[in-house]
Every structure is written in structure tokens, then in C-alpha cells.
Image (tube, rainbow, N blue to C red; front, side, top):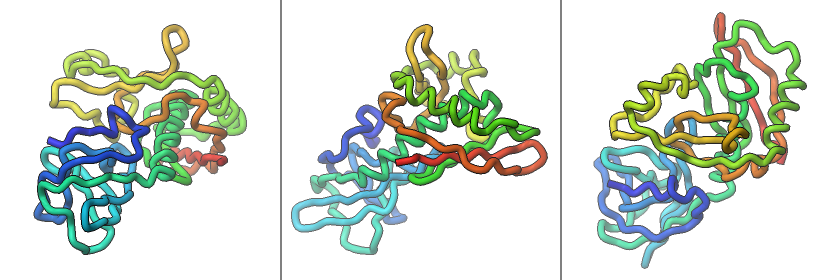
Length: 238
């Protein structure tokens, strides 16, 4: 099993690991990794592996049985099984994904409707809502979104059991993607503390530690996607 270091320390930009396998599809599996694998609307991380006598650009990370597989950007020699490698993230891209992911959680607060889809990008991200009519005042929504950013709320994690999640279905905002269950416990992302808590929902992605780190956001054009779906896009202004 690959230890998901990206979850315990999402700010770790470099780390050593050992190659434990190569998959039949050509992915490199490490015993621990800082690379987030594609999933939950968040793209897999890219970066580089460096080892004695070689280096390799990593195009993305994906989920493989038992862990995370790193996909090379080019068909070059891979580090051998047993080798110690230095993992180096494309930090600027990952950090933008972290800012965006937390921002989408805030968007689901200012638009308290069921979420039917979503996608995170370094430049632009979006959520699709079960929203029969478009919002009448988009500038007011944008102001409310940025007000939550400016409150610099703490972003923390908690864990509950699968049974506890089943007993509290209201925690799940997404209609299209089910929380990862089946391993006994589910990770929750909490924004705000105590009476100041504004959001709590299942999530396996990487996040910033405080909302102030997101920076100013802009809501783009709201698109109609089907009879009752509206797509709301956001961008980072810096």
C-alpha cells in the first residue's frame, strides 16, 4: 500500500520514497507519495522523480490497486524496483489546485444547492448545481464568496466511520460523486471552528490551511447545462 503523504502534509513539496513496483501499464508505484492521484474532480499532480543515475518527468498520478501510480511524461528509463527516489512536485500547480479546491467548498456555501458535478483546474474551476433558475445577482454572490475568503477561516480535517456518514446523509453535497466508503472511515473537511463553522463535507482532496490563502476570486459566466443544471465557474485573480 502506498502511504498518502499528500494527505497528511499537503504542503510537502519534496520527499524521498522507495520504488515498490511497476504496473503492467507502466506506472511507477512508491511506498509513500506526495503526488495526489486524479480523482474527485481534482487532477493528478505532476513533477519529477530523481534518483542516482537518472531523473524522470511525471505527467500525472493515478489510482492503482493498492496505491498511487506515477505516469511518466516520456517513455524513458524508469527507476528500478527497490531504488530510493526523490519526489519533486510542480508546487505552483498543486498549490493552485489546493486554493481552488477550498474555494469550491466555499462556493457550495454561498450557493446552498445540491452539486451535480465539478472540476478543478489551475486557472479555472467549476461546480454544477441543481439550479432551475440562474442567480439574479451574481456580483452579490461573488462578494459573499470573497467575504468568506477574507474571514481567513481555518480549514481542518476530521474522520467519521462509514456508518456515521450513512446516518448523516446531509453531509454529502454532491449528487454525482459518492464519498469514498468501504475502508471503515471517511475524511471530512471542516471550514471554520465551533460557532464559526460554515462547512463540513466528505472530501479526499488537498486543501489550503486557511481560506485567506485562496486570494481574491471571480465568478464567471453562469451556463445552463440541461433543464435544471447551471454551471458556475470561478477564477483566481492572482
